[in-house]
Every structure is written in C-alpha cells, then in structure tokens.
Image (cartoon, rainbow over all chains, first blue to last red; front, side, top):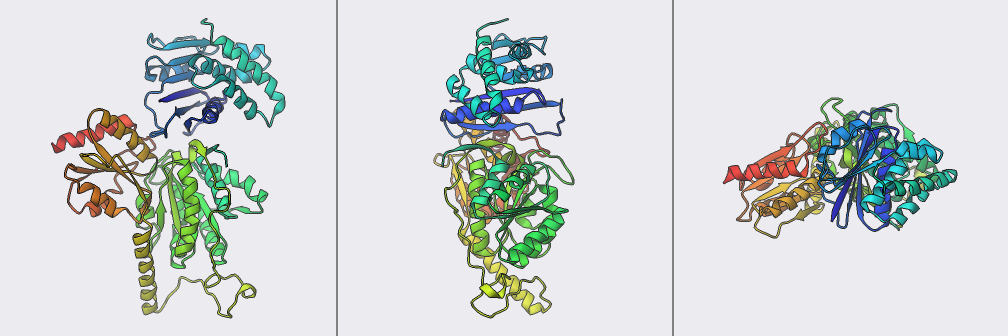
Amino acid sequence: MQSEVMFAGFGGQGILLSGKILAQTAMDQGFEVAWVPSYGPEMRGGTAYCTVVISDEPIGSPIIKNPAHLVAMNRPSLEKFAGIVKPKGVILINASLIPIRSGRDDIDELIVQTTEIASEIGNIRAANIVALASFIARSRIVDFDIFRECVKKEFSKKPKLIPLNMKAVDKGKLAANFDV
Amino acid sequence: MAKVLMKGNEAIGEAAIRSGCLNYFAYPITPQSEVAEYLAKRMPEVGGMFLQGESEVAVGYMLFGASACGERVFTTSSSPGISLMSEAISYIAAAQCPVVFVNIMRGGPGLGGILPSQADYSQSVKGGGHGDYKLLVMAPASVQEAVEMVTEAFVLAEKYRNPVMILGDGLIGQMMEPVEFPEKVAAKPSDKSEWATTGMDTRKSDKRNLVKTLFLDPEELNRHNLMLKEKYKKMEAEEVRYSTYNTDGDYKAVIASYGTMSRVCKTAIDMLKKEGIEVCMIRPQTLFPFPEVAIRKAVEKKSCKLAISIEMNMGQMVEDIQRSVSGIVPVKWYGKCGGEIPTPEETAEAVKKYLNNEE
C-alpha cells in the first residue's frame, strides 16, 4: 500500500516542516518514505509545497501526479491542487485563510481554523502543527502517538516550544472531529 | 546504525566524512548548496576542512593540488559549476589523481534552471574537458544509493588513480529519504607513496615523485595515452554496475534509465503490467563503464521489439544504447528537459505509443 500527502501554502507557513514531521513519523513507524520538496526560485511569501510518499514497500517514483491527500494552507494552493487529489482522500482546508471550499463531493473535506486555534493556545506560528495533527487524526495515515513523539523530537533543541506544540497537537486532533 | 531521515545533499556530505575524506573544496550553487552548508558545520567537528574557493575554477585546482599531495579530497557542484571545473578535471585525469566529484545536475544549457535534470550525461561520460580521458561515472537513484556510491567512489578513485564523478539529478540532492550509514570507515586509504608528493620524510625510497600533465616528447605522450587507455579498458572489464527490473517475462521493450528517472520508469512498468503490457528495465549504475553487454542481452530476447532511453535530457544516452544493441532493435527516446520530471503516467503513455507504432 502506498499513500501520498501534498502540503501546500505560503513560504513561511511551515509547509516543508509539516511534511518532514509526517515523513519522520512514518519512518519511525517502519514505513518507507520519501519527502519531495518544491525548490523552485521561491521567495518568502511565495508558494511552497512538498509531497510525502509513504509506503510499506520500496518507493518507485517519488514524483506523484495525483496525491491521496492534500493539506491546503492558503487559497491559491487549494485552487491549484484540489482537483488532483484522488477520490476518497482527505482535503484539509485552512479556513483561517481560505474562504472557499474544494467543490468536490468525492473526498473527505476537513475544515480547520488553524490560525484561530493556534492563536488561542498562544502562538499563531503553531498553525502548521494544528493542521498536521488534525490531518493525521482524520486520515489515520500514521500512528498518532508516534506522531506526538516526533513533534517532541523535532523541537528537542528548543524545549520551551514543546508545551505549545503539544497543545497544538491536542487541539488539532480535537478539530478533526468537528466539521465547521 | 539506525536509519535517519536525511536530505540527499546532507547525506552525501556525511557519507564523504564517513569514507575518511576530510578535505572538501567547493563553491555554492543550487541545487546542492546544502552540502557546503552541512560540511561547513560538520568538517570542523571531525578535524576536517571545508574551504570555499573564489570560483569553481579555483576549486578544481585546489582539488588537484591536495590530491597530488596524497590527500583524500572531494567536491560537489551543479552543472554550470562542473563546466567551470572541467579544465581542472582534464588535468586531474591526466595526472591520475583520485578525486571524487559530485554533480547534482540542474537544467541547462547556460545558466538554464535550478530544477532536476540529467543533461550532463555527455559532459561526464564523453568528456567535458580536453584530451583523451574518461571519468568513472556513477548514477545513484536514491539517497541511500548516493551514500553507498560516495564510499565506493573513493575506493575506485584510488584503485584506478582516476577521477570519479557521481552524477545525481537535483531531486537526489533535495529529496529526504531514510538512510543508513556504515558504522566504520568503509574506504581504507590506499598507499600513495609511489606517486604522491607527500614529502621525503615519510618515504621509504629516495625516488622523487612528480605529478605532471606536460609531456612534450610525442612518444612519451603517446605512451601516456596508451597507458590511460589500458586503465579505461580495465574499468570496462571490471567495474560495470547495473540493476534490472521485470526481466523475467516476455517483455516487448527494454527501457534504459538511470537516477530519479529510473524510479519513475519502475512505477510506469508496474502500471503497464496491470494493463498486460510487459516492459523491462536495465538501470545503469555506472554510466562509464556502460552496461553494454547487459543491454544487448536484454534486447536479444525474441519478444523484444524496442529499446527506449528514458532520461531528463534530449536523448544523450541514445547513442550508447545504439552501440550496445548494434542494430538488433530500434532505439527510441522519451524524456523532458528544464526541470519538469515526467510522471509515471506520462512515461507509461510514451512507452505505449512507441509499442503501438511498432505493431
């Protein structure tokens, strides 16, 4: 079985980091993984996206035409990529910045106010972790407890950020169960 | 050692250190600047050295000098940077210095673009610099393979006293994959006392070592070239590396592909199999020496109608495949330039089109 997740948003929203944490979680769980970034001539505030491929056997092509899931953190990303997600996939929409919806009825649309949630727990920069937690809780693509450990590991060099990110993980998970 | 999730560029830097290479000269260029960034931090931790040259031209000669003095050295760059080093590469090959080069290719010609490409195949395999010389060229298809090839490159460079080029595309450098490093230094340093200018105090004989590339006597230069030719022939006899995929059945075509593109082809082959179309792949892991015999044997199978070179360039490997198949089947090409990597769907479609035209 192979699954693919595309993360997309503005540069600076923590898109590449979200993908990396998912890849790390999947690897720790024993899966084969590939993390493929976009590295075009981008600038701060430009578009950023990456694809994470997760498989229980060696990964062939790391280049994916149709990902199984999408985490869209800004409007241009949703407009650009909503159409390429495979049926039955999860499309997470960051409702704090995206006023529109995917327009698809064959996918599982997950709407999360990531910025508001992150701001409630004390720092809007945790919005990407809120989104990632929410996505993982909904898609069950990896084990949630291993994911929680990976977030801790990711911030091990900045331990004072761990409590904030643990809150982001919990709130994100909670948000996955509510459709706004 | 446990697996770690690492970017190809960083893993290549770490692999060089673990191969006992403590000298890194380089000049930053996208998409491989992370190697320099990583080694700027890592080299001092292990007592090694990273020196950024004022240009790739200078870097080439820093490598030449340090290697001539018996040091294990390597550099990383990307396409335009390798062009600038090409003069030094010719000198290094002439002087038989064991230097490892890594080219994380980007689109060309000229400044081109910064996205993945395989457009430096001919530059690496056929020349690049002047004169009759060959590089041993290796093409990794994953981050793990890149790590293993770095170690092997140092061994082969010293075995043959010849520069080795690791030819990866931009994606090999930028992608993160799990890697496992060898516990111990896997590439023991070779005895260089017979040729390197290491100073007389460590030397057993009182013979003077001289590293040079100038041979004004035509007979002497001819002998030098013949000796190099023998060396390249030995590489062709002993160092061909390749892997195969789906070669058991009655396939209709043989794909030859390397690097990231070969992984796309592997998925395309699986897709075609589901439609009942059998296609196999020979993946050269060394581009020089080229797996000529393996490709010829593959196309000799009765069911095989075609050979297809699939690369992220305009078909630079085609003539090597033609040479290998010596007219048994026609040789086609599919690929893209500029940084866009063909998807498995597009690749499968291209293969199908060629097969339909054959029937």
